Length: 331
Length: 193
Image (cartoon, rainbow over all chains, first blue to last red; front, side):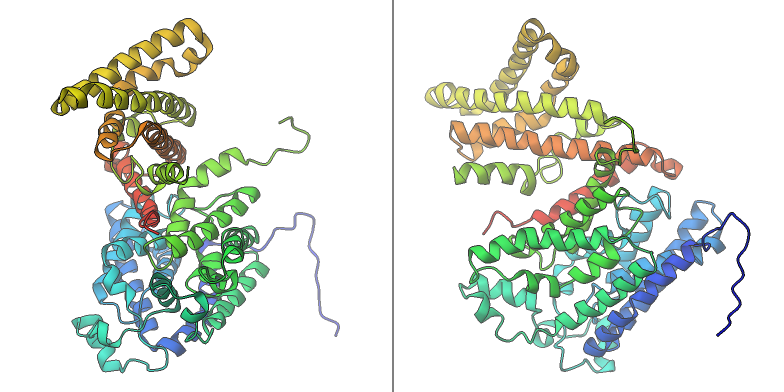
């Protein structure tokens, strides 16, 4: 009961936070979602993450050496593995190994080190890597294995390292793809979602749990996730109310695809995002709105990556025009 | 009305002149060091581009087509654009000195902006009527200005960065433009449905 609680003298310094602890916490917060994803999709999820991490660390070391920077502090700061894991979580578990290699070259070399390395990147490295491979290798990235029949380890290794998975025979459309195809054939949303057991809501919940823990740890701010929610509602709700047969409900958008992961883990990147509170709200809203627009009207299955990149481009202007006014200063 | 709105949105986002059609890259690279001049150039371009799109459309329908001189269009449009910019500059200096002070120095730059000629030529290709041509020109200019101003914001932030020596200046600018183009890929296919 009587715990010792010593109080020091006046300057109370907050706990020392380093890049390593922040990145470590984000990685930790990803665990529930990663665990659930692995349970559904098999060990391929972890294999992709390990592959991407290996390439990321290799490229990080190579770039640090080329730029004449010390290896040890930067390799240990966990920022490259975090980029790699966020990237790998977007990949189908049986994607060939060179997808991770190409994505990590785009992310670590182009999006990160050519801009000056950690803390200077204008665009979110993980999303640069993912958007690039999505645009370049759409076919390899669109086939997901069926949820209830995990891929045998032999076939998985063959698919990742040998290119031997018969994609079209085994792949199953994701709920987002099903919705797009069925609507394209003139069916209604209810018909398209008949086979959807809504279980991806559990994955969204797992990401949200991790995200709430990050909020509680003050690693991320509430503005971005709330902005994303508002952005999704602002676009999806009017469309849905206008014609419930042709447009999916906001709930469907929120619980499917990469939206929850993006709202808490990707759009909250402090470097490439906006730095002002109102800027963060608008940043999130832009990501949410763009995601729904791409899903509803665009050509790609999901729009989180494009939304994040687009808002990355807007972030400097958001910060410039929404700078908080110091109290008492004139406008 | 819906058609015009579709033309406008397509020109601004889906077929953005700078990031998807790669027209008008030189002013985007050249006048994007700071945001204020970028806004000035964007406004001046919007003004001239809309006028040029309309005028070149009139020249096309009332002069070149009736006379069977379709093959002269490139030359004719360059002439129309150059003359238009001169007239606009003179009128602006006389009548709107304030506006001239803001936009004046950018007007000669616009003469050589390939996006202006591009809009005039694309208008003939896509068979727009006069309203369509005007809206297409305006949309192209809005898309151009949007990218120009966003790009200027990014470059201001780059100034504080630590870009490796060989990549400072134009190389990192082109890489940034490439990544912005990647972001704009998200708009692909939006016009189709």
